[in-house]
Length: 291
Ligand SMILES: Nc1nc2c(ncn2[C@@H]2O[C@H](COP(=O)(O)OP(=O)(O)OP(=O)(O)O)[C@@H](O)[C@H]2O)c(=O)[nH]1
Ligand SMILES: [Mg+2]
Ligand SMILES: [Zn+2]
Image (cartoon, rainbow, N blue to C red; front, side, top):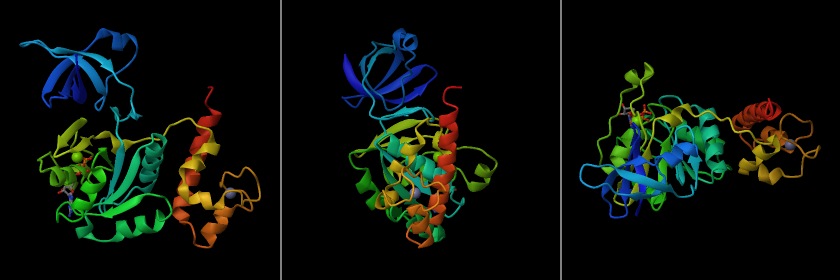
């Protein structure tokens, strides 16, 4: 038996990179189906290599450090949230991804790509995430700016690039790793065509990276106690216990210290507004949890 990591999975066949760095094509044992366990790209596994033309067998999946269902990938440790001046950032998507990453104990970094096209995206990010405990990088895949700083953050991590279609995730990977992944032009993307179609785990020069299509469609649908949501907002920590009502959800309660901080310009109004949208959503899912 050998140890390895699933780097691709398609049509019931899994490609695993073994500890010897060679790649093996495997089938999953029947027991996984019986146990309703689906092997995921990123899974650390025990396997038996095949002999000759025979496929080998995936025998065991080791405990996952993190697990995403959409896209289906495991063991990401760093989520790089990519945005750009164009297409215009979907900040609610960024906040949902930040939240999802924190819930899975992933580290996060906001990567403002295409800085050769303008500063609007990085200016907004710097303003709205100043107290959100997330690093913000200014990069240009085309001009090869900021790539070394990004590589430094990625060392030792299994990184996934998430963000809307067209922000330049694949272009960034190509620039970082010296690859030639398929990239698309904006006009094609505007017709709703996604260029990256399936998840793959790449490893080059010690950088481990997941290229996945699905994070652009990330939907937050975690059922959790609405009181927990604020714990994922580091910027609220300063106001703990200062609201008139206890507990305060920082929704629209009178005498809320978070609302006061927004009025005083100490917290970003739009970030708090989006928090309140997610709070509403969380409350709704919580109410419906037994339906
Ligand atoms: N000006 C500029 N354009 C860039 C930069 N990075 C990527 N692009 C362009 O943006 C477009 C989309 O890039 P992709 O890498 O395909 O975007 P993606 O995020 O992988 O998109 P999906 O795979 O559809 O999710 C391409 O035309 C790239 O050439 C950059 O730093 N500056
Ligand atoms: Mg892509
Ligand atoms: Zn409050």
